[in-house]
Length: 146
Image (cartoon, rainbow, N blue to C red; front, side):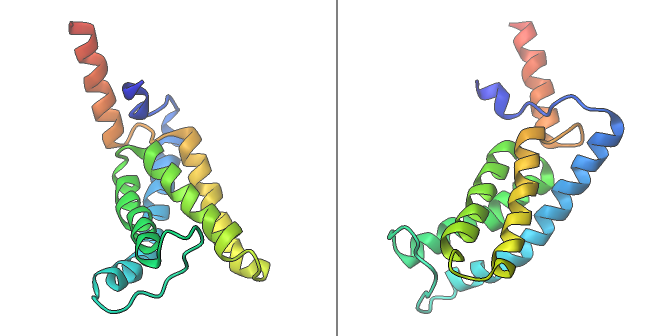
């Protein structure tokens, strides 16, 4: 079961390159959203952030920063890609269908586009050009030895 988290999938060279490009672009673009929130989190001032589930603005902000910064970095490197994509997918669905539910579609659209990208990465995994591939290959090699 643990090994399946790092399974990079089996694809042709072109698909592996496309997944790499999608991971890097989506990760970098999401970082641009997360860095500002990270600065708000560590800024020390009063935190005003949506709290859609009643856990507190600070915890909501922390969870969003975790996804948008930490998970975006995981995505860029292709490390625990399915976990990172799942966390980012949930964050984008909350943004679209909870935080912006009463806003115009234009406010939901970007979150939904990101959600679609993260759903693809969740289903497709990290591809050949990833840290997941190295870990999976090593796990497979070690399981044959023992």
